[in-house]
Length: 547
Image 1 (cartoon, rainbow, N blue to C red):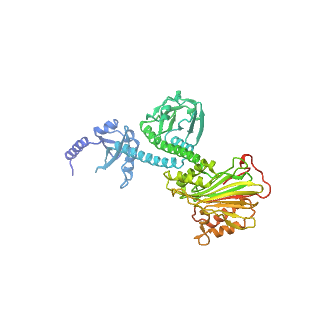
Image 2 (cartoon, one colour):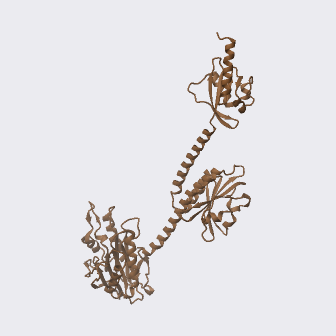
Image 3 (tube, rainbow, N blue to C red):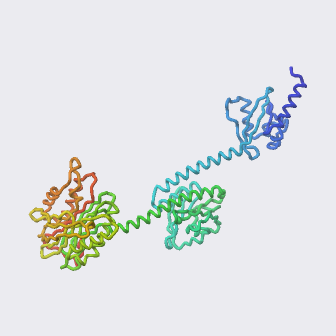
């Protein structure tokens, strides 16, 4: 048996080891009383002295862990964790033979703080990724501003205001409170009334976030029914070389102010929102420029000019495009006795490059209208203009000058490398106009033959591009529409108005192609009307029809 002297020696050794331990240590007996505690534990829990009851001195989490250990210890259970004196500890228990329990506390405050920061950074990174996807899902500036405001209000503050750079005297503003976003156009509002806002909207030089005194903020900056503002900060939205706007974040009076970490995270979000808004603004500007230029390239409206019927149909090679390599123009006569000029052309290639050259050819021909009495001379001058440009593409053209004489229409027709037009007589005969010439934009010199032609009432001249005759379709999708099929179709158009002839040709060609790929298609008809017709003053169309 162990005598009292040996037990005293063991206790002395235990006391020495207890006080030498580098961790806070507590020894508790089976009845819930403090037996011993080292100095480190006493600094954390001053009331934990020998003989004191555990239920009176220990924090709840450690007392609960002690009770569970005494009742039914769970094998492989994770060590309990909790706070003591404002720091985080992990508790480890050791049972002694006499039934006592030794609790060793290890300080894991820094580890827990690092874990929380890591989790916070992961959540923030995931949010920024989701925000970028949502912000870039639309290139509409208004929609992008609404998304930025809603996301900022939901994840960064109690409310957010997104402000775009001013356009004139108007200021575009989106206010959001996390559930809804409200867009407004404000006039007569001075950004200088908000500290830091004018600098943020200018975007240069780069400015940091700026705290705003809520009492000095104008009413338009605070969302309706928001209540007292406790904190407010304005952050610039940087764009792609141009300022994208500013973001104002608001916290209610009873919420904590923005921390330095939250302010830094707001700047990260602002960078993504600014990039998305800048891209949306640039896209809108480019779309506006494209639309302006596109209007100049679109086929003109046609109708009846000087007692002569004109009609046209056009279909680009790609259904999503409105212009391409085929084009036509109707130049009305300046006076009733003068000729109107119709031009149909086909530029080598497709898409925007071909459309740009198309625009140049149309503008050049428009400048040469005073020479329209001599088709060959116009073509030669056009050829010289194309050869002197940087374009390497060529074009084919067919020109027709038309003038009403009594009930007939007199024409002069000239081809330059283009398929010869077809004339549809009143009795259904279809014949090719005897005109030919070199294509333009290739050879230094070109030559062409102008053919005279007269249309009786109900007769039509049909100008078309090879996109009609060379379109492939049919049962197997590899058969050309061809000249013969076009002539048979036109034979049924005798006596029909110009609109009906053009519509019939386009309809048949479209049905023949189906879903197959095809070239640009264009068809223009010139018809001598049946019976009397109204002549528009000055040679302008009496009724317009879209191309």
